[in-house]
Length: 268
Image (cartoon, rainbow, N blue to C red; front, side):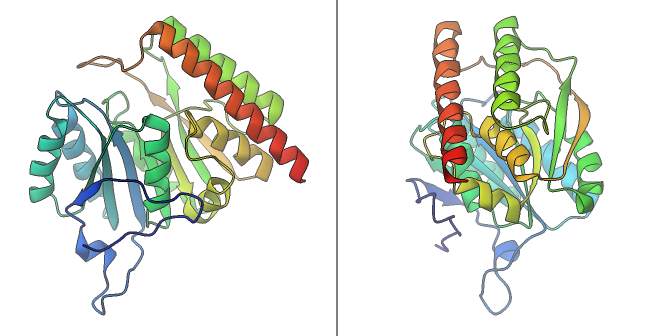
């Protein structure tokens, strides 16, 4: 099976790929080529919604007439999500499914970023909380920006998550700068050359890499655009972190963000 490009700082993890979309990744001469867009979507226990989410995203991207690959990473789901993804991969030639042992949301995102081949890389979660219809606004404005984000509006999340998001924003602003408002937004489009330069500075076990990437975008002076995107509450399943674990995870994310910020200052 064809191997995919990995950033040097992100060693390959275990797992297997289904449906490699060869028409997107191979030229007629057999050499790898670059699609316009890679969509990275981590998945964990989303059997109730994942088929609808995947088909909605493929339909939206097809309407844009963009050369894309849709990369889904099943992070050790235990509810039948993996089997659903395998069936979808049989019908959707642009879908690339990777199944791996559970490693956590952050490391899974980082793996996807490292394996993405597109000139542009878009990350979105698989919980159906943010619609694909708004992606066109980011895509149409990409040429004059390096990072484009969907800022969650009218956010339907528990209070504890909104408090943690606010604390993360203040941490990033204090340590790196104010280029990004919704620092952990799971709806972000990167110019891959800029993303690759930032990935080298993030440990691959990072819990919330998007938070640190928002900070590094400010530190590096990237051209950032945020647009408001409606946020809707989860309609199926349940969140994977209960409250006490969520606070522990937030503390871990804070420590990792501070560590990267300190290292950045020491190296400059």
